[in-house]
Image 1: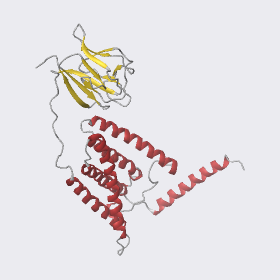
Image 2: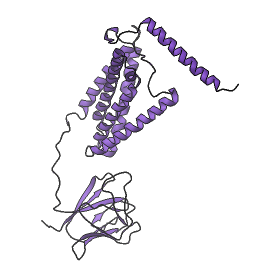
Image 3: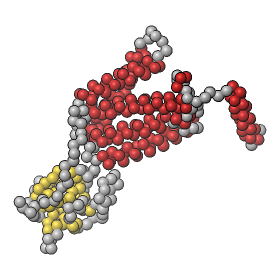
Image 4: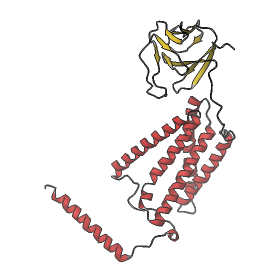
Length: 332
């Protein structure tokens, strides 16, 4: 094995290796021209952009060959949308972890004996790809749509509500999964439509189940805030689904999926809260428990008539006082 050989790795903007090329002899020229040892398809790279060689002291360096855009060392070891680079340099010392940008392309150089980490444990459920998760998801969607239609049905003769509900629920989830599958095809190489459809379906099932459970608990124990802020629980579950969608697209970068899901949760919650306050002057969904359930699950003692009348009188007194205060500050 030639110990002096090097491996040149071209990386994408997320730090994932796109290509690896083994070079046994130095110097190595990198550029857009066909006469280079490493050819880079980048319009911002010169025909011969740089040369990789060893100095007299044996240090491996990259030298600019007079390109217009120069070569830059990536200052931050973490890949982000705002990646920082150094000013153009005529020479950059190369270590196994040095990232160099030429044009819009980023590369690093590693020796042939560079140690790699052990392989990851494969936890992917390969059986849940393709048709199987899609069939399971469609079945769950139909059951869910029928349950929603049944719970909202007030007649015994019309079937149109059931048909409309099934078409609406199934159609919405097919579009939702299709959008994620398109992103998966663009950034992950394959669509994985069935997996995305299953994730979206489980999101809807979990969201409705959590909302229904919150309503029952709120009704049983008169926990008003639990019923008022149920939409925020749905947003939290949506953020979890976004995490799994993004993780399906980028399985080798789950840290990015976590950061994306957290950012989505913060922005979505803030936007929803601002919308609720601007339209209803409150952050919750309702000012009172608007859903009635079985009286048998009610765990708190009912309020007596006298206590209710007294509370109403107190509320009237406070409302009158508030009205008088506002009237005193107005000019007629």
